[in-house]
Length: 97
Image 1 (cartoon, rainbow, N blue to C red):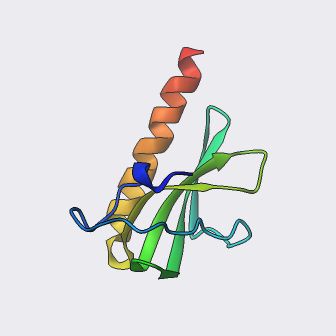
Image 2 (image 1 turned 180 degrees about the vertical axis):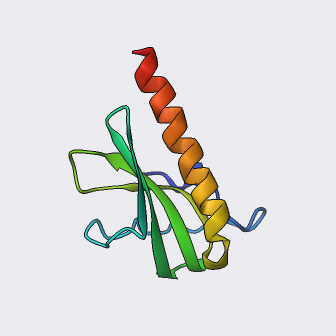
Image 3 (image 1 turned 90 degrees about the vertical axis):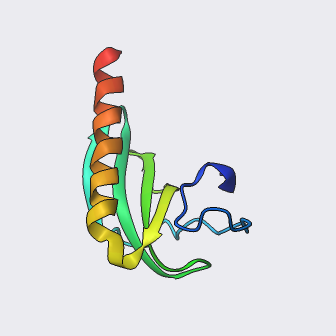
């Protein structure tokens, strides 16, 4: 995935390509599924940006995920709100089909 579409905590800082999380890395929390995708959080202390929480989305029938947002590890409550908002958006899309 292009790193250009990831929401990051350091706005204005030049982006460096960050590797996607290891697909076998256990999620910190899975919020649920919608429109054939699952949404979750992964705690990634070894990220290029430092200790972060990744909000990830991936097909519910495949192990891979893509990062859609990064937040500092101490912002777990905010990451949960974003994760639930993404899940709700997928549920709305799924209902419209």
